[in-house]
Amino acid sequence: MTESSKKMEDIYEEFTNQVDRINYLIKQFTELEETNGKQKKDRYYWNSHLSTLSMNIWAGQVKYLELQKKEASLKKAISKATNVIDLKQQELKDLITKRTTYFTKQCDKFRIKGIRYTNNFLHAQTEYTNKNLRDKIEEFQKQYQQMYNELPTFAEKLSNLETISNSEETETASKVNFVLTNITTINTYKLLQITCAQNMLRKLENEIKQKRMILNNVQNK
Image (cartoon, rainbow, N blue to C red; front, side, top):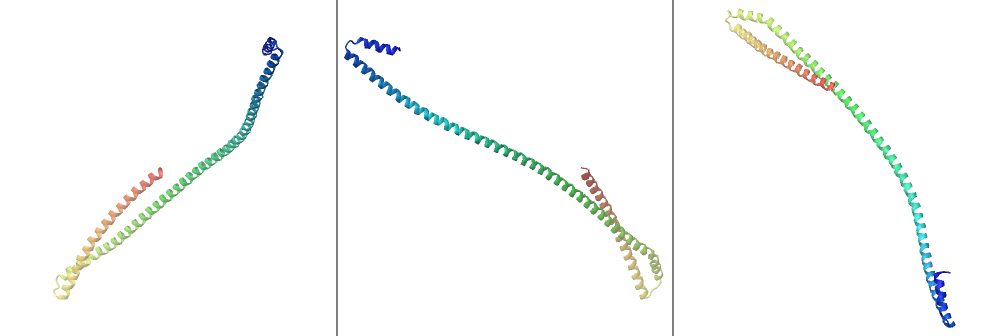
């Protein structure tokens, strides 16, 4: 027997009148009915709340599973994208290396071509300049030697004409004198040309030496 039941029984025994006892029991029954109704309502409320909670938990679990699937899918996509990025980065590095190698080879090729072209140009310029100047010097030396050989003949003619007084011989002597003067002037001019040509040749040879030194320095780098 519970404490509550014993208390009710003690109160019941206190009533001597049967009607009071019945009224007391009716009152207790009514209170019990009300308590029971209240407990039923509370139970219904909690059952409904539990049902809602269960539904929310189930929905949460479904959503959690979906999120897990999405997470796995995203991880897979991220891993795939990372692999693609790594692959592309490696391809980019390979392309940069190939491009650098290609441009280095091209630069070396053009540098070698430029050096060869410069060498060929300088060689051709040297050969042409030397040959040209030597040919001119040789030609002038021949002319100078020819004039030098003819000079005594003209001098002898001039000496012979000093005793002749007629106008024709005098005119001839003037012509001879003019020729000799002209030869001397030409001779002096040719000598100046030779000197200038020789100076120019020396200057070109010095410039060619300097350019070759520069090219050697470039080739050694």
